Length: 270
Length: 264
Image (cartoon, rainbow over all chains, first blue to last red; front, side):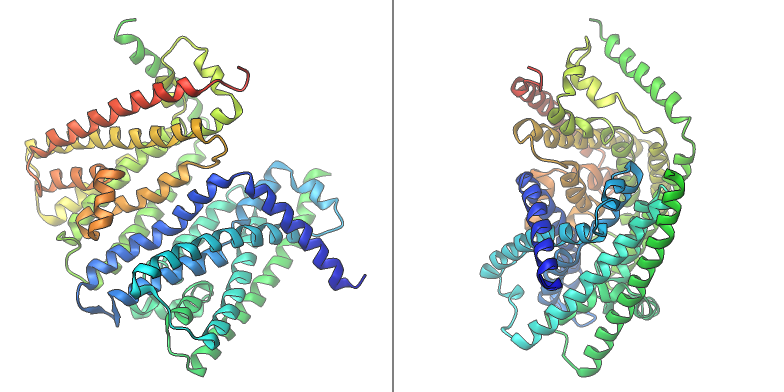
């Protein structure tokens, strides 16, 4: 079999497996959807009140509505719980038998990740379509070129968030507070990734600091592409360049943490 | 069984937990840093909103900070008592461990609610009240004794209301056994209590006042403290708290009747 066929079969099996496990907890889908919806809805509610009949930093009520629906969807498509999973594997020793398999555990995490994303994003999409059928403000213009760019940006953002989450989870080799570090990262991301507000509304200094870090490329950039930033080639170029540079950096960080961590892990166990 | 019996049980549980938690003092620092970080991000978020407005739902900046202090106080009670106690109910229903609780000669709801207490999270209560106090100073408002009394009553009612919401949520586990992580639902909804309820559009406001009454847990006590609402609101809050408690009691009995345990 060609390598492509081998990997397709492997991933097919792992994703099906993850999907079937998830299906046993169907009722939890409702929980995770609510969890993914409330934070943007509350932010939208507050900005809705602040905007009133005017506009804040170029955003009127309808723009805020589109922006936060975009946040909801892109977040569901790029979310990564891997640091929690990895933290548990390392602390409770579940990593041991995974290391004995002829496949890097990263692939299992990636398959899980894809499975719950399909489920989460699928349900958010249904929520959005239902909202759009009664609320014209959240409808998007039909624009296949834009959607192609958005798909690429979302894929890169998802890859970035996966490696950030996975690498942070690997810190469990050294500390028992790896998930606390991830929550710290999420707290900073509230502002710098554009979860509480579009980046244009942050104080200019904070916004320019954000541009130097990976946060805006995880969420704000794809959301702005989706909800109607003008598609200038300069903006696209800078956005995608930022995504690719930071993705490469985080993959390098993952490789380093994985190599060093395994040496350390072996030392404890053996 | 005299009225003192339940109090003695709670007292014994608290003593046990204190003895246990004192062994893990590093958790104190971690919990303190976590709370300070959380308060920091909450204040920055507020600051961000107030860069673009002067009032939020008719509230000034420091009034909303008072509310944030109340939010943190109630969250402290949730993290210290509710999450480690009643929050474990869903998994115990699934595993059948609830049998061990029911077998004891104490009121099961009492035992489930108080058996585990995360002592260090009470620092959140202290920090929350301090934040509210500081914001009052910045507002240049000294509450009268009556306002403080009204605030304390409203705060006690707030604790009853969040307790009722937790019991109601956790009771869902008796009907839908496979629901894994019910507390997530609370965390998601409770986010809405960080801001005055008057800031939300009508539909959300309706949800927060009547359906999931989290408005009563922060907006009302904060209003009582800043004098935005008269002391009479405390009577309303007390009524809502008492009603919430009676409903949970009934719900608990109903839920237990459905429970047959893993072994039974």
